[in-house]
Length: 304
Image 1: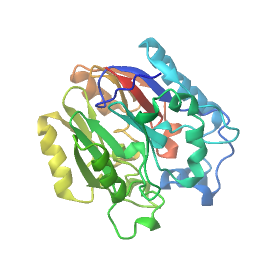
Image 2 (image 1 turned 120 degrees about the vertical axis):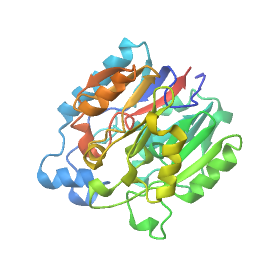
Image 3 (image 1 turned 180 degrees about the horizontal axis):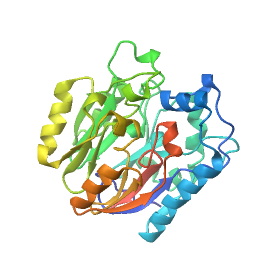
């Protein structure tokens, strides 16, 4: 059995699910695009090819091996995108929550049955169908659970609105001992520079008490201000619109002192090092074309 334990984003990682780019399938059609960034690359003919993405993910697997992290991979489904394991589930404390994702993606969860089955039944949680939530919108910070959502009445018009307020309320009932704060995110089906697909597209804690933040990702200025003040000006690294578009907030922490980051995130990586954090640089720019990066393709199961 797996002894699940995840309380935050930065404690020492022991076990993780890393997605796979193998048998990723053909380039989606314009109609099949789930997000504006994929759409942009489908239209431009620059959508990533499988071999490049496999290579990028294997580089991450090698970093995990270096730090002695147990890595689980999904069972490969022919011609199916299984890169973003963060979307399909998440662990809070010792509970494994199956995410309610887009119906087209349900097979992705079935492909990690070998992980799910190692979790005691009483620790497996499946939310009611009307509660939409994806792991990219769930950010843990010890006593806090931060959840990205979209509160607009036009929620159903946005394929990129992935977590609703019903799910936020369900999470409050499931984790009454946690302080749960939701954040209304900016959504656009067509402009990737104006779209925070998930909370981790515009915010992520890093190190001991620091955070990466992008102001424009939040629809309510006071919610952004709350987060900014919660961490404190001296602990916040603010990213601009272009850095948000390139997914600078979507790095992944192996511990408080070690992160995996994209090698082109020069400004961010320099700042991380100035904070005493070791940066393991990988190339992930092809996977980034699908509006997801390192946090999106990892699902932590056990941290210290």
